[in-house]
Amino acid sequence: MSADDWHRRVDPSKPHPARMYDYFLDGKDNFEADRKAAEQVLRIAPEARLMALENRAFLGRAVRFLAAAGIRQFLDIGTGLPTQGSTSEVAHEVAPDARIVYVDNDPMVLVHARALLADRDAKSTVVVEGDVRDPDAILGHPDVRAVIDFDQPVAVLLVAILHFIRESEDPVGIVERFKRVMAPGSYLVISHGTHDFDPERSAEAVRPYANATAPAVGRSGAEIKRFFDGLEMVDPGLVQLPLWRPDGEPPSHLDVIWLYGGVGRRV
Image 1 (cartoon, helix red, strand yellow):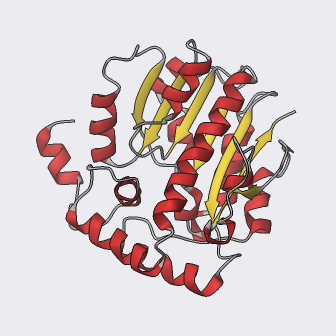
Image 2 (cartoon, helix red, strand yellow; image 1 turned 60 degrees about the vertical axis):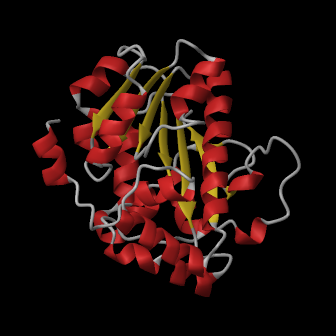
């Protein structure tokens, strides 16, 4: 991507969820508009930073579980910036031969991700431009096809992305399209925001996303469970993020973690 293309496509005046997430994780790859929107969220829900950390921890535990279960292909969609605790870092700790494709639609994420992963083998870790709203374009992308063999088990990661897909954009249909190409033994990983635990305050906390590139949508546990229809849920099922196979005792702050997470297996 040329410098002209980058400047034409990146609007620093409009918050982007990936860059807001980077700010919540104390990253530096964000603009003033992202920081302002993120600070609005934090004023309403100071727990947002903790939720971002719990989401990153869930991703790590899920990837570690999958790699230990024999998965060697990971399709991470809406990845954001692959910083510490990224899919490739965790997967390669368990399985150095694992292959990872990162997909994101933010040019800033793409540029930084490619720079961060420049020393990785291009046959095992690649970054692809794509939008979850167009699954066929992702699944048919030549760089995806060069790394992922969909005739073999694959893990499809939709971590903290589906709550940026409106109902009018058919999130269930999007997930079904990915599920259709998953061979038996494949896994689907999802984390998703919800209003189940503090409806009034969590609804207020997503309002700053209204002017972002993708407004946030909270869904109930029952609605999120629908994404796993046809799959066998991995124990403990769909739960609040800290409860999904915790490394130690579950934290006492569950009431402020407004996200569910789960892993489903195609049998």
